[in-house]
Length: 119
Image (cartoon, rainbow, N blue to C red):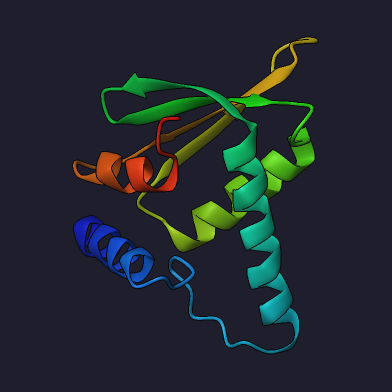
């Protein structure tokens, strides 16, 4: 079951659809899709570093480019569309960055690579 979710998510992304989306382009759902797109853009811009883990990646996000509540909102949206991902968000003391860790089953790294390519 997890792998079919992963394949579906990868298929939708490759076809240019909002991942995992069953949203109709109207009303609140359209606004939600727009908000998701905005958060993904902001997360990508905020990535300062990426550390490979055995089953995914940890990203270092610049807190000047995305707030902690926005990072948490993005994590919440990711969790709804990609239930096969294990998502964690770390913030320590007065550090100027957030660390989201995205991990999952075998095959998740190519999906994450496509969403967050190294610069």
